Length: 193
Ligand SMILES: [Zn+2]
Image (tube, rainbow, N blue to C red; front, top):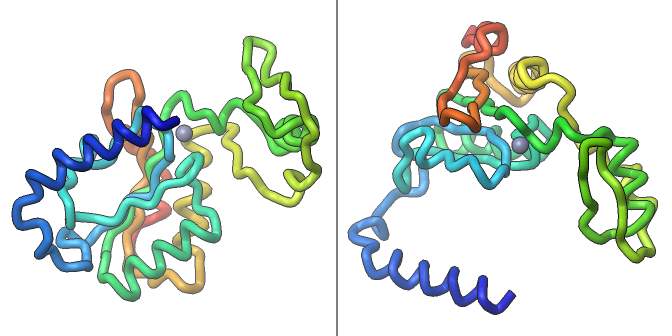
């Protein structure tokens, strides 16, 4: 673990040494948009969407789902910081497609250690004890990728704290090619009124 901390601090030292005039950037995103996307380590929104510091808000969670907390951030992003267009970007091969709420509850009941996965699914091999608390969380898993993008765009658009004139675009990032593939029905559901 110390090795990771050292690596991060060394990387930060070289980043800060080349920081330029970014200390003068204003807080509101200069390009007035926000992206809600998955935390998957293969996704780098700054690269796949061409962002520099100060450009846009990027809200990330497991799956890029429109959870209550993601909506909290989006509402702040518009209401206080002026973003006018939002993207929901899920991706191929998402880990959220590999389990259900029931699977997660069982794994956590068994132990808190990292589970293993094979062709037959997830298995808990930890030493325990686990906890039953997992049942009180909706893990917002994904059964069908375009359907999950559509569901999240619809939820955001229908939210009473989201103004109707914000367009919400639905996309899937292809982990094999790096391309953003539109989910047309999601973008249609997300059009500004
Ligand atoms: Zn994912």
